[in-house]
Each structure stands twice: as C-alpha cells, then as structure tokens.
Length: 237
Image 1 (cartoon, rainbow, N blue to C red):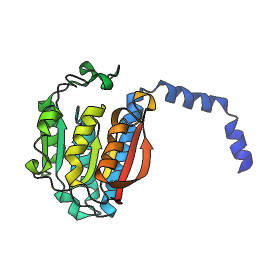
Image 2 (cartoon, rainbow, N blue to C red):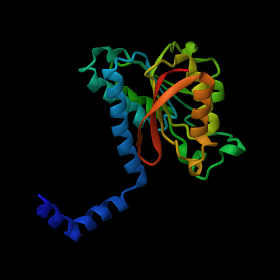
Image 3 (cartoon, rainbow, N blue to C red):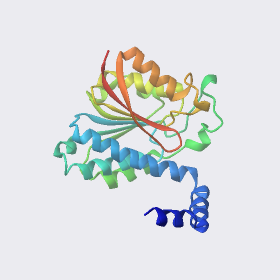
C-alpha cells in the first residue's frame, strides 16, 4: 500500500492535471457546488432531528439555492414524511441592493451583479415544487419584513438561509426571524467572511448581534465554498 501510494504521488502529470482543473474552475461554480452539498447536509440534519417549521431564504437571486432546497427536502421526505409539510418563503428585492449605507459599501455588492426577474424565479420554482407550498416576496427588506413573520403565517423556522450579503439587510432579516427561532433551527450564512473577514461588518456582525440580543446559544456545523458558514441554535442562555 505504501509503495503504491508513493508511486502515485510521483506521477506529476496527475497532480498537474488536477491542479489545472481546479485552478481554472470559475469560483462561482466551486462555491455553488459546495453550497449545494452543504444544503443537502443541512436538510438531512434537520430531517433526522425531526425539526418542524418553515424554510426561509433571504436573498433569492435567481432561485438556485431555493430550488435546490426544495429538491433536497423532497428526496429526504422518504426518510421523514413530515417534511412534506414544509413551506418555503423567499424574500428578495429582485432589483439589487438599492441604496446601501456607507458601512455596507463593497466593490462586489452592487445592483448590476444582483438584478434578476421575479417572474423567471417563480417559474423556475414552480417547476421544481410541484405540490409543495412556496411563496416569493418581492421588496426591499425595510418594507417587506416590517410587518413581522406572523403576517406571513410563519410561526417556526427549520432552516434559515441568509444570502443578502450586507450588514443592514442581514440584520433586518435576522430581526424578522427572531420570533420563529427554536432549538435546532439551522442558519446558512452565505457571506460570513466578507469585508476582509471583519467581525464588525457584514453578515458576521449581524449574526453576532442577533445571537446576543436574542439570548441564544449556537454551535458551528460546517464551512463551505468561498466563505459560507452553517450554525445551529442549541438553546437559550
């Protein structure tokens, strides 16, 4: 076994081929593949722990993650039939960021990179969902989330995907989610290490403040892609 491994490790063309392939892959493709894998793990963990509640996503963009979550849940419903009752809520302006506070300025988080079409996303989700209940809510968060989760009939959350990039948007989304939190609620934080890894900016700051203000405890589950993190609520302090 040792000799075989030593022989393979010396095959430079294999190493060069793998390196060339990985180096040449679009970072967005790498991130999305790892994100899909992470979401599958998240839905599995939620299924075997029998966590009730809805799936909430903030920052739907083209609907890829939203549709993938529906697919994962449909597949895992064979393991836990109660998952068939999960409802899916997606919140997005579908028009980019709008006016961004100065502290949230980032060279990548601009409207041109994140404009999309609500109609196209709805059509995409409808093809995947079949008889699954889903609702896409259009609007900037300061307006669409102001009414609170109960206005949408959301009482508890199983999985919350925060993919809205900036501190202000993430903070508004997390405040909206607070009444729905339970032990076992899982947070997928897609841009946790943005703003050069600062803990005082972006999603990282918003999540830290949310945990403190809610008197919550959490455990880290995994990291994925180009700076995503997954945490699970483990109780209240």
